[in-house]
Length: 187
Image (cartoon, rainbow, N blue to C red):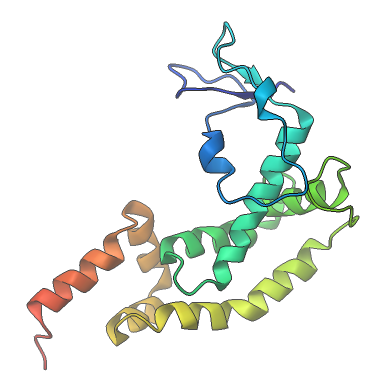
């Protein structure tokens, strides 16, 4: 399968295996043993598409897994935490899809091109179990900075809050600001 990088959003039909991603965004904050050699990346290819090396694809799998670390950060945006949790705990039939959480663990754990030392097969369900065990504490730490009515909304209607954040990542901040400006009508 052909994998490629488009230096600009593709126009019209997108060929299979073509991903639009900015390397500076995808690789931000990465700490690795050895990063891919980006100098060989030809963004001026005649068809506007540069081929990804296998090393770059492995590195992207690794970089996606780095987002899981953000779950433990109480200051990380809530919408990003929810998106990461959806990715980690996706439906089992999606585990074999490219760039799924399970696929990323498999590639990063077993590829000789991985930016981490070889660790072999990683049991995805063990990792998920660990994340599930810690998620409650991580979310409580994140929600501690929000007013009680936000905590109640998330506890009573998490899917609705998640849908609002998916449509507008600033929704929560806007609601807090609006509620602060109006005050509590029942106080």
